[in-house]
Length: 365
Image (cartoon, rainbow, N blue to C red; front, side, top):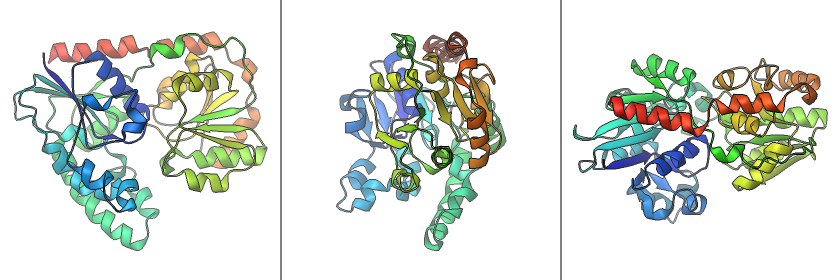
């Protein structure tokens, strides 16, 4: 069976890209189609010789204008045509990994298409007004028109895949709400690596965030809460929101940037708790932390409700506010959490279960 993989953007390393990495290992001969590719970030995960980029790669990343290289979201209206331009006629199966555009590929009816949906594009549907509220008048005018056109395309393109796989119950709900399609749930995988060679002793001296630095991740809540309580916070990850976050960070907050996987494992294992402050579609971070025996303090909503057992593997704060998170941090006591219970919860989401779900979907199709 000749397989191709599709993922819209390989420009940041997040949970969706970790899922793609597992798919790439399941199908080692499959090429990976993507709109944009930053080789310096993905050289070890997804080497360049496997990646097929769109024509936008040269026009954006090789542009003489720096604004193009660092603000590729200005080109959103060109992404649908770019994903539709790929030709998959010679393949038997295409698996797309989609958070916005990849589900919209055209297969011309020959290869089967399974689309793994991390979420219908949040900025086109349930987060539109949040995005527009942060824009200046000129940006708002551009985005309103662009989002309107993209919503029409998105709703039509959602009918193209033969099978939709949802990353969580929350994502399945959105697929039905916005696209009016049924889907099957296959939870993202926690790689076996996270369960191996866990450090035996915990320093428990700091709180930890592992995330891309984007506004919707609500990392500002964690920074403000730790500023107020004078708590040590380490932030592993990078992104467009970093400068703004650094401006509000107090002396107890440390930005680590992108960290390699072994370092990240040590950070998980030695943290007092992981803070997961955003409303996420699923979120692998609480499960990777649980594999290391570390609890998570998360906002009560979205995918975190499917991965965290309250009082056993972590705690929730009720409102998306600094005050609510501060209250939970003040009550938090790590001694009440069992490392073995945390690891048992993470085991339910091991890579084996993900691979079984993908292969079962292929066999049914």
